[in-house]
Length: 213
Image (tube, rainbow, N blue to C red):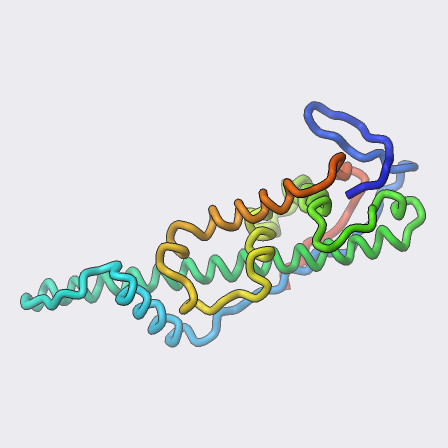
């Protein structure tokens, strides 16, 4: 991420040295919500996923009590799928907002003479920009508005999906089991493609707000 600058080493971490002692104000991270509309339609689609992916047997049941229990379980699974999808949408929205925030931070760096030398000109989204994600993680320890979101996973989802697919595009296996692992793998693959050295931004030298919209 950074040009040839001096670095501080603290433990196993490297921090870029920033001239002066001022605290730099960065743009606020504006987290846009992605409300799920037409829950009735989504429940219908989730029920279709439960049926088509053979989550439950589709064999006819002659006992009315067993049939009622079967329908109850189908409904529970469909509700769970909808809940998983809403979590996916919420996490993706965080990732989308974080990437937009990084773009704004780059613009801020470019307009300030003391920060401009820190950035290299790289093709977006260059993996070196993970330093902004790490800065956000460092600051998130004191930011309750992060709502315990897995920030790396959120960025990974946004790197994977330019736009969030509708629930009908997902298998039950993805929503139940693969969502988190795929997102984390995407982030790790992206961040590992940086050109060394990539150092962290010292969190005490920056301030920004996180605003949930």
